[in-house]
Length: 380
Image (cartoon, rainbow, N blue to C red; front, side, top):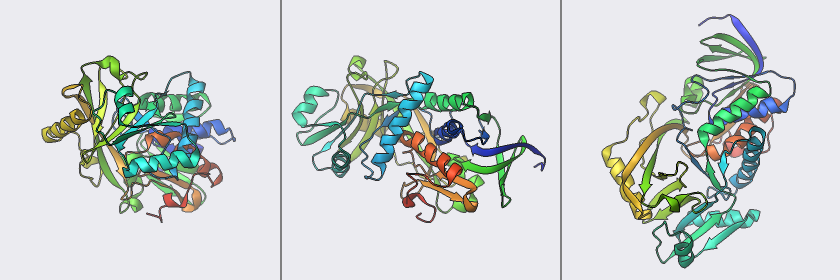
């Protein structure tokens, strides 16, 4: 590890994935005179972290509680802003449909968020669900809630676009560069990398499943979760296009899946919770899925959507930093010189622009609208 300072920056963003790319974009757009440098251990887009996998579901009416709905409204504004700046579709505005038995707790919380914030929506009974969305198996006691502000996101394109926009706005980025250590000097931070040392006033650390390597103090609060995505072929793909099918969550017989309409014209994502164990470090992550787990995913998917053919045509496994409560950690250390965002628990991508904005604001001013006490390290 060399002590030679090879660069200086006002703010360094470490990790340019889901949230880091957005933080870099918001910092570059702030135009406050401070230089901004992003450092990524892989390339500008890669398949190693939490965000890859073609698509993600976007919701505004949060089943996780009212705290999140205002943040999701802001997130949608930012997705739209990034699309307008880049000219690229990142959020497929197809809506988000939740289907579950009447009175199901997540459905009730979704309806509460809709009521509290007067969100545009549609409530469908079983007969209406069968007419409007024949793709699903519907029970007589099922209810559907369509969040019309929801849809499907393109994560790889979004990460690449946010980083590219940041560079166009004057930020710099080092790719294929590993950060080895952080050294708080009392008036700044030395960022030790494989290219040498960067002297920074502030540092944002958003390194997902690698978080505890740079921040060992979080090892008792953050683990590495393993999330699996699966795609199936429908017999009638024309029924699963974004104009006919929203993004969706379906709960039936104690099982849960989420999915998005077909984006490739052939396959549809239908992903069940496979309950893979959490591990202590990225090196211990799951890189494969057992035949038994894929058989279960197939059984659950076919129970929800009868039109599917056979087992998954493809699948992928993705690690992410996870907290016990699944509430993220967004906080500062070293008297504000180090800003942390981690523990997004497989639920972070729809929030990526707003969490990136929060971290940028914390680095710039020490305050942010959505930096709630529940996200602090001490709250975990």
